[in-house]
Length: 311
Ligand code: NAD
Image (cartoon, rainbow, N blue to C red; front, top):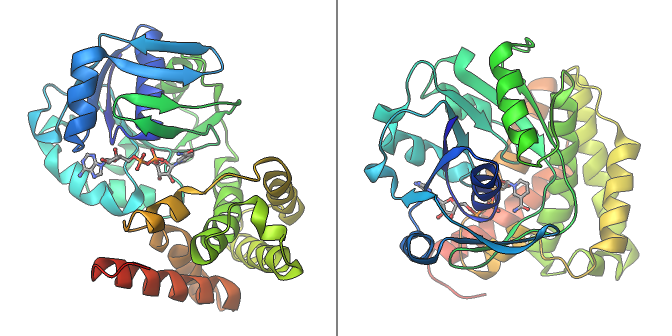
């Protein structure tokens, strides 16, 4: 398969590197010149449970330098950058190109549909973890899985082929008719933990420093699950709460990417997480006061950062 990764940060580089190792023809597109230049010079360094090695044979360039029309375009920019990134490669998306988003949050499929036909869009969820350790250097420890489905909900040959390619790269990928349950449950998890850490500066483990931390996380999870259920999605509150409790107990020193973005003065994915939940809650006539408050607080922090004012 010819596979292009749009947004080759932590996740895009991990997936691109593993797909290249499994024999696929992979192009990484990004706007981080230091990262691209280092990959071109020394290959991509992957540190995973399979070992610490360099992956060669990848093409890494800026979107405007893209060549050809891939069979699979895997979108791994942060949600707020997808529109601009896709606009830059409009001429490289053919009718046969399948476009897969594994981004966190909601509304990502709708963004893709502004650029390609609905039948080309595949959606999914992954819980593989990844962090950038430096230019051309990605770290990912622990196990994860990927679940995907065509946006039209049908089990199709093209979706099965994409799942097979990801699975052959060791990414534990399957086609899942219940993918929206997985997507919403991850949204509930992120709406609670990412935002609370981003606002307070706490690591995940520090959220149990006061009883209010876990009580707030619980309240947000219950709000998001109530919105999912109003949309006919059978998200399971206890499953989300168990994931939150596991993360607080086991990933104590982890700084969620939303906190990392705040600390670096970057924009966050708050609109595609809490913002999208609030929009759907309003449509359904459901109050989500905790989710809405966290959205407002994050917007204030982002506005301060955009004005160039340090915390
Ligand atoms: P990241 O910030 O490490 O990578 C995003 C990349 O997109 C960056 O390298 C950035 O330079 C690039 N980019 C920005 N604008 C671009 C443009 N116009 N054209 C091309 N590239 C552009 O983020 P990440 O952690 O890899 O996350 C990517 C997505 O995956 C997010 O939606 C995130 O929520 C989701 N996700 C992350 C993890 C994780 O553990 N990191 C796990 C599951 C899902």
